[in-house]
Image 1 (cartoon, protein in one colour):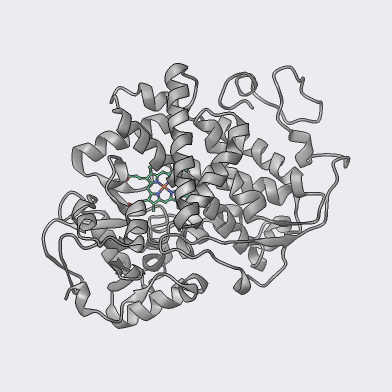
Image 2 (cartoon, helix red, strand yellow):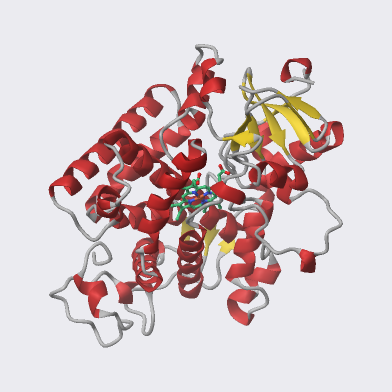
Length: 441
Ligand code: HEM
C-alpha cells in the first residue's frame, strides 16, 4: 500500500499530539503494526517506523536498501509553506546527515576527529562553571523555569565557547535558534538569517585567526571541507547539539522531580541521575522522530509498500516503547535503546551529550536539593513539532540559597579570569583550564 490510500494517517502535529504522543503511537500500532502512515504537517506525509525491530532494520541497512538522500522526495513536494517548513528540516544538504557511503564517511570522520579533541575533564569543568553561573541567577529566588533559565541556556553557552566565540555572543545565538526552531513565517525567517550570519561571522573570524576550538579544527581538518561543506557541517553540528541536549536535560529533570525513586535519590541515592537520563532517552528521547530515511527502489517493508521519494521517519520514541518480550538483561544498549539512533548515522556525540547533561543536572541538584514541580507532571506544557520531545516550561520551587552562605554554592565557582587568583574555597582547577581558550572564559 502507498501513502495515498491511507486516509487515517496519524497526525504528528497539533495540541493532541504535543500533549501525549505515546497515545498516538499506541493507536497507530494497533491499526498498522510496525510501519504507520502519518502527516508531519497538513498534507506532508510520511511512513513512521514504530516497531523496534523494524527501526533497527532501517538503521542498520543504510547503503543497502536505505539511503539518507532526500533529493527525490524534496523535488516532489508542492510549493506550500508546510512543504517549505519540512524542507528546512529535511532537505538535502552536503553534510553527514543527508549523505551515504564514502561521502558520509568523509563528513562523519571530520566531525568525530574534531570532537575527539575535546577533553572530557575540561568539558566537565566548563559545564560545571556554566551551570553554576546560571544557577546563581535564580538560586536566591526560590523558583525557576528550568527550561528557560537553565536547560536551554546550557548547550548554547557551552557550544558557543566550544566553537570559539566569546560568551557575549551566546545571547544572540540563543535568540536566533529559538526564533528558528519555534516559529514559522517572519520570525522563523529572521532567526534563520541571524543563525546564518552567526555561522558566517564565525567562519570569517576563524579563517583570519585560528584558536583551540571546534571551528578551527574543522577548517584545518585534512579532509579539506569546501566552504559550503564547512558551513553546512557547522549548521548540522550546532543544530544537532543545541535542541536535543537542551531537551535531554529538561526531560530528565522533569522525571527526577516527579518520581519519588529519583527525588529521594537527591538525598539517599535510590536511583541515580544516570538512571534518569537513560530512562528519558528510552521513554522520551529528545529526537523523538528525527530519523529521515528513503528507499532506493520499491520495498515491501514489514507489511507496507514503500516507494522511492517517499519520506520514512524512524520514530525512536515509538520504537523504544514498543511492548516487547525481550528481557532487560538481554539488551545491549544500556537502557538508552535507540535514544541516540543506531548504525552508520548513530549520534557521533552521545558521550559528550551525556557528559554535558549529567554534569549540568548534578550541579543543579547538588545546589538545590529540594526541587519540586509547581504543577503535576501531566500538566506540563510541551512544545509542538513532529521531530522532538521538548518541554515548553518546567516550573519548580525550592528552598532559596544565598550568596553569603558558607560552603559549596553556585557563587563559589564563578568564572576565573587569568588575573584572578583562586579563592581558598574554590574547587581545584588545572592550569590549562584557566589559560587556554575555549575552555577558559
Ligand atoms: C553534544 C551534542 C550533540 C551533537 C554535537 C550531536 C551531533 C549529531 C550529528 C552530527 C549527527 C548526524 C550523524 C550522521 O548522520 O552520521 C547526529 C545524529 C543523531 N543524534 Fe546527535 N548530537 C548531539 C546530541 C544528541 C542528543 C542529546 C540526542 C538525543 C537525546 C541525539 C540524538 C541523535 C540521533 C537519534 C541521531 C541519528 C539521526 C539519524 O538516524 O538520522 N543527539 N547527532
